[in-house]
Length: 340
Ligand code: 5GP
Ligand code: MN
Image 1 (tube, rainbow, N blue to C red):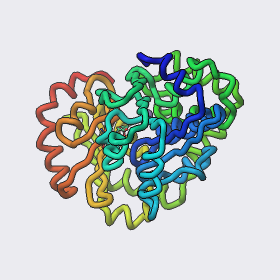
Image 2 (spheres, protein in one colour):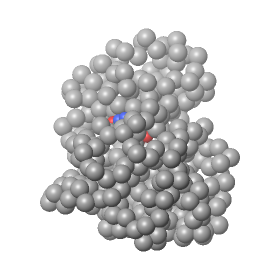
Image 3 (cartoon, rainbow, N blue to C red):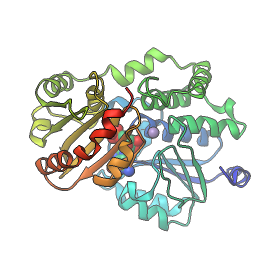
Image 4 (tube, helix red, strand yellow):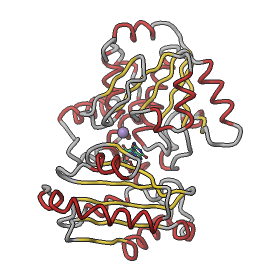
């Protein structure tokens, strides 16, 4: 962060602080928000975490979860607007540009609060007064740990905060399997374990709390919906709203599905298309050089990281898949030479 001393001074006296993260927050988004909130509360600030939408049950164990305001839930939009209006500072976590949070983006932009962006996605927008953007960081939770440490407050990280931060790092590295898993990642996690984090407990809370229906859905998706195009080294799933309904799919139930495509021998690009809330939500994953961030930005109104990105499409599922199939041939050579 460029103007770190001014930032530190600003936090030197109690402030009213709002924290916002991206829609459908994942463990990194929610963990960084609640971890930071836990720390700021200890420093005598008044803190409110706001999420644009709901989020999966398997994240709701995090300390501070019960106080989160879901902007989308009935009656909450006005309350959240007031909080943004009254705030001295707004922290934006785990997303790079205000358009990523839809209508809330303009509320944040127009607020007189000092804005702080802490994120690890590509191409950050320079809207904030204080920006901590590091694309080399595996997770926003890692940046929150480093920030608290740089503020000289490592001792303020208690077990609850440490669990939130560990969860985000664990999931954004794919359980320490992706290429973003660096020595620093392990050092930060070692420090969090020193705070008492029980690795097996966090793993169970995140990964082993599936409903039976989610497992049946996974079976159905792998058996009937997985399409493999070996000639392009691509695998993809297209799941309709009816199919999601049939399995009573909840927020978060499709998370992780896209990774199964990448686990197939020789596949370097995997995609998941789901028909939800009147649009097609898309997840892209790759290994090696192929940038799904660029691909998603170019064709599917999205973005993210080089090897993990999301996007959306406003035409039908069928038309979206057709568009995907129309554009992939031009990447055949690039996908062919991609390392695995
Ligand atoms: P996921 O596929 O797990 O939803 O998201 C993968 C990555 O892409 C995450 O870092 C996420 O923040 C980002 N991402 C997901 N959806 C979108 C989107 O619609 N727009 C942009 N810019 N990024 C997204
Ligand atoms: Mn993240």
